[in-house]
Length: 339
Image 1 (cartoon, rainbow, N blue to C red):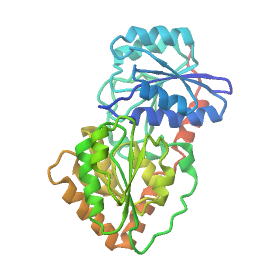
Image 2: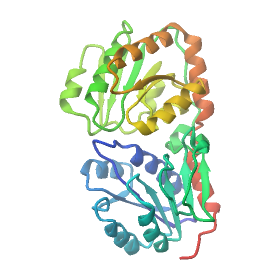
Image 3: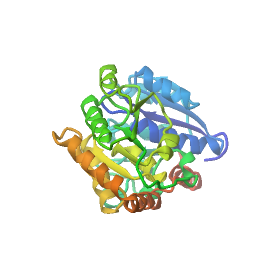
Image 4: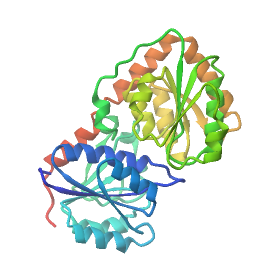
């Protein structure tokens, strides 16, 4: 890819699936735009997702591609991009076969390896990506796998300025961009068990109003619709988070993490981060003992500053914040297949 290259992203988000797909696409889009690419997003018909993309500085076109793949093909054909980046579990191998002749380079961002991906490049920045068995690719498919390709915003490449305090004074709570009121209440309650610590609660655009009202209190600071969390992460002594893309952002900021799984596809992330000594895993969001488990892990971190330092350092070793820039460079260096 060279300066002026047109790149289209096909993705989606919403109350059920959150904003993880959109977040990693935006991270790669920023890295590509920094090298001069012209970026356009094709998204599902969800106004809050469109607003988030436009706030990030990119154009977004709403389409019903999730229910009618032909709509995506028609729009891609009209835009004539040199590259198309697809990030959605809803995109089948059959749809990819239809899209591939329309572009010079077809890229899939994927962390499941559960379906054929007949594309030119597969990107999976997951910590466990290299252990997955991808099938149904093309003979020339390239695979960019592992946390060195984690698609966090390029701003996370800056070395985190972090000082480990003797006591935990601030706890960051975020359970993803979707609507998870029960998990949010449980984790905030766990944070409040730490005596006098202030609880910063970051909620996405799909958070239920009633759920956020239920977590308000004298030590709780609510941050609504905040897209970039890096400053909140650096201010936090510990964090409790879902095990999606926010987990990788927290790791890049060397934040000690208690993670919970908001969906089945997050379980490998949580387990692998715990094995690597980069997080404490609290189990699934729907578990009845979630609040008690998170409180126990937060208590361990609060009582042990050295443990906090070890977890933070291990996270930063895993995720150095340069993954999106690496992917952008790799894509630029690959010859574009003929249409």
